[in-house]
Image: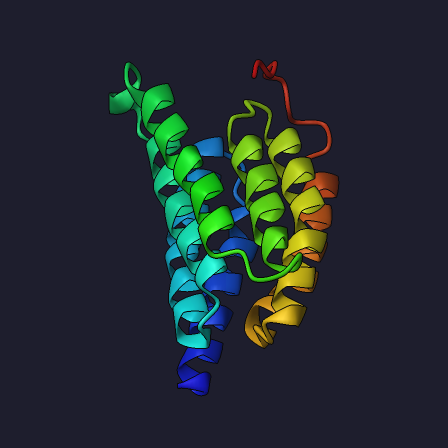
Length: 171
């Protein structure tokens, strides 16, 4: 079972990492959302329930944010799902380390509301130390290595696209 969790973690990390290399916000959101489901699988296989449920709800939020057809109800759906993330963090609380997944995913979700890709990347980078701590505690080595790689990937993309962001953020 451990090797399956490791494989799921590596796939999740790869997808999450390359998501920040896309120029368009819609592509970043799509690939980021797909990666979350592999993270969920990894955390389920490791018995890290807080991370699994929070990443599942965050994955749904990611796809809602990327779906233009849901414009009218988008904020209501996201509010309900985020309330689920808060409730899951309380229900599955087992130590201060379990809260790291809450803070990590909160920064990642807020980042996806940004219009400027640069701000998506910066807020996602702020989330990485929280996930790093969570993954160390729960021995999610695939994700742990991925946190380091993702941080490097975000830094590379910030340098690569440093002069191309023109949109204005409104949150």
